[in-house]
Image (cartoon, rainbow, N blue to C red; front, side):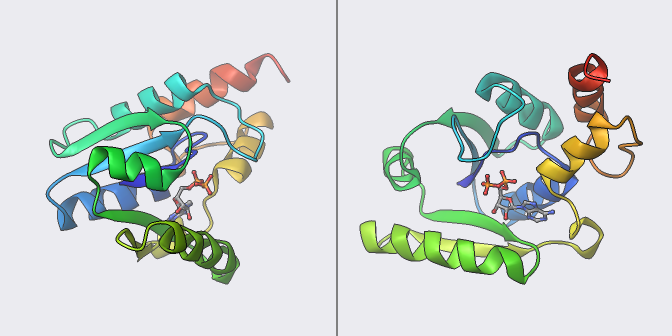
Length: 157
Ligand code: ADP
């Protein structure tokens, strides 16, 4: 499973999901309902945008969950957690999270995929700042996500 808040999904996430789907029989993209970060889109909107972004990928399911990732992984029989890594800055947080998950559920291992270089600077929060200022979203997010971001921030400018 590939868990995340995906608020909203961007091309770095889509790339990781396609690469994971090529490595495993089945991929569950699992969208957290809450986050410690401020969220712009509802869980349903975030699920729907990721689902549309993965249109045509037959072994990928996009669904929501709440509670601990390890519990959802157990419930769905997921053997691995996928996480994407950008820079060193991601590593400390990811290492801590992965160690906690393995402490709680030793059978569940995490596989890290390194971002493709062209996506290394992408983050949902930065993309939202760009969208809020009305700048171009080309090359950052799928077109349908750009439309959703423009619609969301239109009234705030
Ligand atoms: P979080 O799950 O921490 O709320 P996100 O929803 O943004 O963060 O990201 C979900 C997963 O995708 C995390 O493993 C994150 O490191 C990874 N990710 C985020 N941005 C990128 C990117 N540009 N390239 C590759 N992986 C990324």
